[in-house]
Length: 271
Image 1 (cartoon, one colour):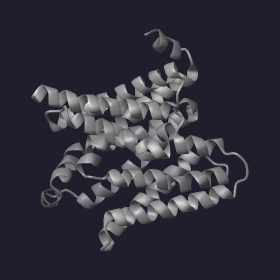
Image 2 (cartoon, rainbow, N blue to C red):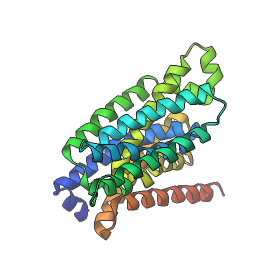
Image 3 (cartoon, helix red, strand yellow):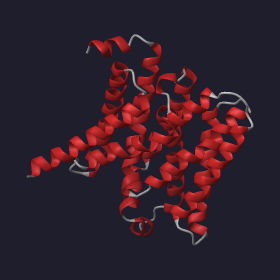
Image 4 (tube, rainbow, N blue to C red):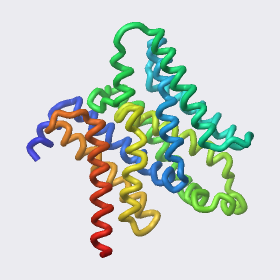
């Protein structure tokens, strides 16, 4: 408890906690639909592909977070379009853009000489380095994404379980799917700032997966997923501070520990 009070005295820790809690709600809510729709690879692909947008931002000396969001949204729209206009599978399309965007990012980064601390931050995450301006950007986009998920909750849930049935019932599944792809791309890129390209998909997948082992209903699944995400972020941040370890990696491992605790606890209760 003493450590928690101590870290709250530091402005950078307060920004990290606020940013983490905001993204925790958004990624956990979004993550429930991601695991049910089996879109984990989409999340991972967008996270890695965002490197190109980040590299463009570093190269032109403009906010990399904004350009990464724009680049990833364009990519999400292209994936959505090609899924419906070609015979290629979703995994193949994502894989092509994933590798091409990563390669483009590496080439662009090579054009900028010298050490790039911002690039390292986006690759491996640095929740403790969140600036107030970035917190504002995260908050604005988080409100937009959460508003979309909340307002269209029933339609998205219907589509998740029965795409054809939703279409027959009159839901414009094409438009909703497109906006969902865009919202997911935004959520992932915002998460990159905290956990990095390499780890961000973990926060999208682990809390909902943990919740799935505990929850008794779909609504409960979302609620528990958000709680697990927030506990994961707060617990991981506190542990990283106490042990003086990289925060992003500790958050992911803390969340993984909660997953296995739920898994074995669930088996113990049933036996």
